[in-house]
Each structure stands twice: as C-alpha cells, then as structure tokens.
Image 1 (spheres, rainbow, N blue to C red):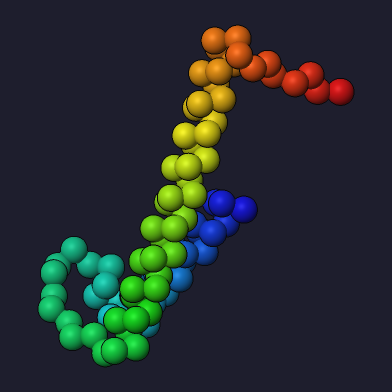
Image 2: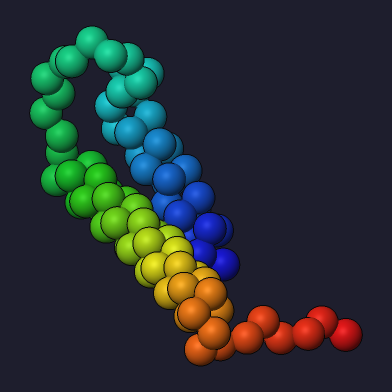
Length: 82
C-alpha cells in the first residue's frame, strides 16, 4: 500500500506538470512560467503527497532495519512459516 501511495502521487505530479506547464516541463532547459492559483495549489498538493509517500517509505525501511538488528542480536526471532 505504501508503494501505491507513492506511485500514485508521482504520477499525479507528472500529470499536473504536463497539463499546467506543458511538454516543456520535462526538458532540462529552465524556462520561467507563471502559474495560476489553481495550478499552484495542484503542484503544492502533489508535492505534499510525494513527501507523505517518501515519509512512509523511510519509516517502513527504518522499522525493517530495526527489526533486523534485533534479530541479529537475539532479542527477536523469525517466525516459522507453516
């Protein structure tokens, strides 16, 4: 579910850039474009979704690493799969 949130936010961000800025959004040539109020809100919302998705991914990886360290130190065990 965490990966789906991040991928959906990334796709939304790319679509907003494509609709608002146009194909020049994907070029490496910096151009100055003035964004409307709704475009600015759309970009801000998609950036917040991306930040939320990255936070979820980082949090998940930190929990996995902490559990790994506890298993190595013998404080936890890996459950047997039936």
